[in-house]
Image 1: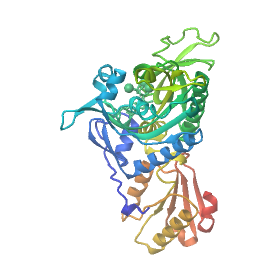
Image 2: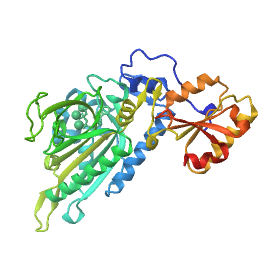
Image 3: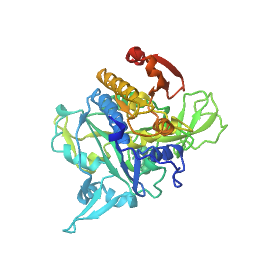
Image 4: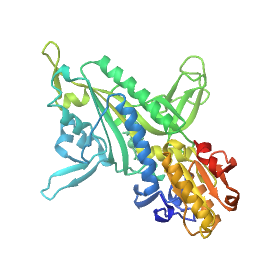
Length: 413
Ligand code: ATP
Ligand code: MG
Ligand code: MG
Ligand code: MG
């Protein structure tokens, strides 16, 4: 993509309402624009990064036999009355009324809708187990929307649901999700920790959270220094220095951002919504369920919170909006612009996603924008091009290499 054709509304000033670095950089680098409290437009660079995160999620969930579908945001009150959650969920539920006075919620989660989708179909043990997932916009009227995408009132979630004839089958799928989530967060470049969790509002028995480690995290992880125990403070309220729950270590605390959550729901929803199947003995049983969430937009923010310096973002290659930033220093010099354009085409031809800064801007502006946006590799085409040389800079380490333009593609590969 040519930068002159791309919508990247960068800001020079640090927005005053953005308290944490990832939020400041997402605003300053032109990734997001606030529309209302906790409601954002994802601008083109953010959309590209989200697309990569979603692709990683799809690959890992398809690999464990997940079926992708898409459910509506608009959910009728009647479904929520079946589980009692219309009254239990409280003021986080965004409610609205249609022109015929029918009440709806804008879905904060989809247990009711998915259980209604499958309850007529999953009527025999032969059709179980089943795993479905979607990547969809969720609505929660958070009491304190803050930190940009971290706690939005409208945000992107991947939610998945699994259905089983027996507990062993649920256990197996739950373990597969734990592995898939581990793969997903590793591939996204997150430093994270899986912790024991409270199953809260959704209900159920066993649950675990995936916490991206960050000082600004709103959750507190209680862990043993020997490494074998970690839980959300909501389930293990132990002070720093306490002997440890695992019998060997000492308790310490860390801050985390909840990026994923896996639950064994059991039969809470299937019993209240009468989702039953016939077992091998033709006996009616409630379907056993699991549910599994990832905060897709929150993941993007958490990655930036963990990967930045004073000049801007530092994207891991896997989810960067582009792989390479090609910068002709002076586009008025045909030699530089032509060489940069050729490099741009050559790199694209071998499969890289490339951003070419063909704008008529001063070099200083281009370099500071490039640092702010933080693509993994920068190729600068300047005076050296008359000797057939370009400069490569690695955003993460700051390393700089002078490379022959003829060897550029193989150098980067
Ligand atoms: P939190 O404890 O942060 O409020 P939650 O436990 O209410 O999150 P879940 O119901 O487990 O959230 O939803 C699944 C995932 O959706 C969470 O693990 C998180 O990554 C993401 N998520 C939840 N609320 C928000 C929000 N307001 N903005 C962005 N992402 C969110
Ligand atoms: Mg919440
Ligand atoms: Mg939580
Ligand atoms: Mg949760």
